[in-house]
Image 1: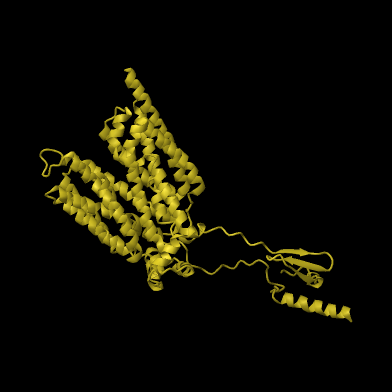
Image 2: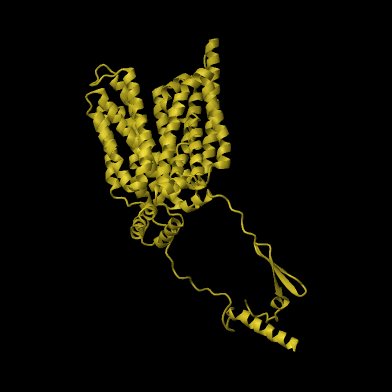
Length: 541
């Protein structure tokens, strides 16, 4: 009786297990070649994303104009026949007052980017630049120039974070790195334009010309859509988010999936109050990328990047090269622009870490070669011997500038728009931009001190050593964000959780089978479950 009951139970279990398996008909082929239903593509229009990114980053040209203006205008203002004549003390204030406004703009941008939205912030920040350049162009006294320079510096500080954050949020992963680097291209283009037009225009006419650039940026900002990510996180407006994505993608792109991803990610960790934002800053997803970006800025600046930019004429003169220092300065500007564009293309193909390696190793070696020639040139001068291979220092400087532009001038600024959590991306982006500009201030202030301590050649040797050692930091800590969504980047900074132990199935050859569970408990199943009657070999399960 027991045997018949077991057989009955065995047949019942076997039949129940086979109910869920769809058995093919005799004449039905096992392999089907049915064409899947057509679905919308995941990649949107590259042209639309490029045009939107160009419009959002047009205002970064003003940053280059601010950097390059004093190089061409101060010599004119110090001439005897100038409409406004200044002395060296006033010239130093005209050059430096913009750096006071830049950190203030960074802090304001960090607040307005999240409060007003990316688009409205991009519109508002152009106004100080336009007013500032007009004040400089129509100035009748030196204080008016001071005030105008402060305003244009304020605007240049405000544009850094929202332009990059906006670009990263409207672009797809395969284009985001290249498009986010448009801000660096805009800055380099602004420097080049200032050098070119400054050679033929007076200082006041040049300031009026500069006002046209933020005016164009103001008009372009009105035609771009608001950031889809901000519309979800701050406004919870699904309809506007979907409409914004359609404008920067195309009708064939699957924007619904992207909207759903934004909704799910927003609801998973939704923040509303300032207290909650402060709490989020203390999480690894916020403080880890902030520390990484801040250290990146310090290391890149202590490679001597902006020392060469701000003291190019003096550095070339002290190097021992016989090339005209002003011609060499123009060539440096051309190298900056060309290799900024090249760096954007390389970032699209290679990623962030390889470009960082190129800058750290290339800048370190070229700077050590430059420092070595400077030291040897001092030895030749003291011995009364003529210098040889005078082309070597300027070539080392050109290589240094090219390598630094590819990585140091692009990667940390691109990371600002990528690595921070969505809810405080604008806030931390502004603070990180402030850290970047403050790093420039620190390096420029310590440059004369280093010269007094270790000499001119020793100073550049220190920069070279710092650059090479920074490779270690990039290898271990610099995140690779190429082809990753912003959600994936944010999740990568979370604390790593131990993976769950997989379920292990052990089938005994005798009467029972055990399943090892995560809680170390064993579930025992009767042998009947694993010794069901064998089916015909023609049955496909």
